[in-house]
Length: 212
Image (cartoon, rainbow, N blue to C red; front, side, top):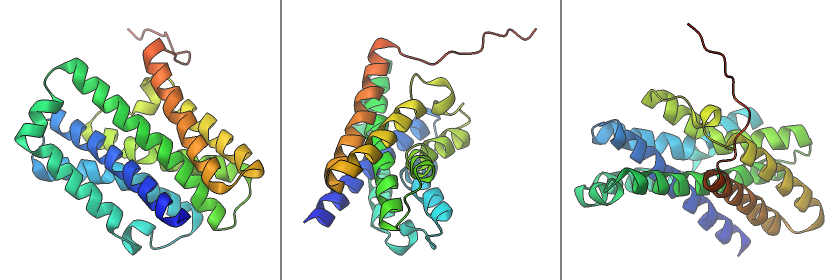
C-alpha cells in the first residue's frame, strides 16, 4: 500500500513539474517539441542527476519510463489551444499557476530524493540534504537554462532555501516517525514555505552592486 501511495505522490510531482516546464516553453513561444522537451526535462531532470550522484544507473527514469510518459502526456495537454488560453488568460493567473505547480513539484521531489537515498541505505545527513535539494531544484535549473532565464533558485524568493528546510525537516522526522509521514511532512513544509514566501515577499539578501 505504501509503495502505491508513494508512486501516486511521485506522479503528482511529475505532472506538476511538467506543467511548469511546459508553461515556460509556451511563454518563450516554443513549438510543441520544445514545449514537450522543456516539460519532460523539468519533471525528470532532478531525478536523473540524483541517480547519477547515488550511483543508481541507468537512472530510474530510464528503468521505468512511466514518469517520462506522464511528463510527455502532460506537456502535450498543456499545448492544447484551450489549455493554453486558460493558462495565459492574464499574467496574474499565469504567475499563480506556475507558482503552485512549481511549489508542488519542488516539495514532492525534495522529499522523494531523500527517500531514494534512504532506500539505497545512505545515512550521511549532508548527502541526504544535497540529494533532496538537487532532486527538487535540478529539473527547474535545467528548464530555466534551456529557456534562457536566470534560474529560479538565484532570483525567486525563498526557493532553494525552502527545499533545504524541507529536506532537514524530512530527515529529522524520519528518525522519529515512519517514512511516509516524514516524506509527506517534508514535502508539505517546502510547499507551504514557497507559497508563504511568494505571498509575503520573503527573500534572501541580494547584491546591490551597480555595474556601470
